[in-house]
Image (cartoon, rainbow, N blue to C red; front, side, top):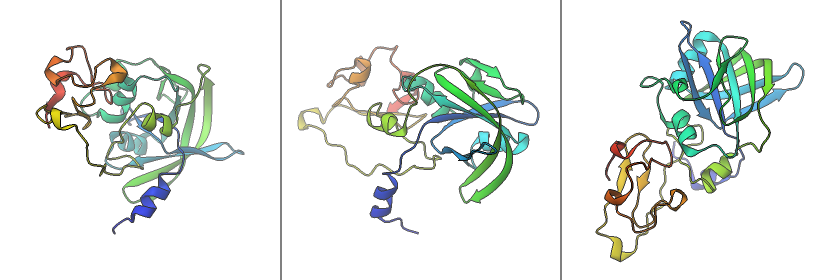
Length: 238
């Protein structure tokens, strides 16, 4: 079914947070991913829900174990951290090799790096939502990790200029044409093979000290994709 522009715009007005949902497989393997659909359902007993794409490894592991944790991300979390859990696949890397975490009371990994608090839950029900599954869970434990401001999806999108993975609940294609000054038309764009971020020399990456007008070849080798943290070697001409 063709989704009308009015529907897309209206849905874009809904507010979300950004969280790391983590779990384990039945044989103890760990994985986690970024979600923006996690919310409290009831107060007594305390119950929460998360929505996961059926193609994601976290979805598979959660179906096997029936337990999960939700870490609430700090607003100051770097894009490389968000990219690790938002764009990297657990089938290729162990995401927990490079981030601080602890083991929860139910044996699941709980991300503590760049997190304000974390909530553990046991699945009590599921709802088939087509491309996604809504997992409902009764809260079994929680912990306060640090003081700070929770990261919202609006801040991630508008201030951090973050992208939305294709498997996310709120994904929609970017149909806005890129506008480039004529004198920069000969400068090549490069695309990240991991997340799809496009480096455009016309705009550069000022948030990471790469000025507008900087060719990709002139960016320092230490520069990483501002969306997922991939190195320059993960880019190719667009």
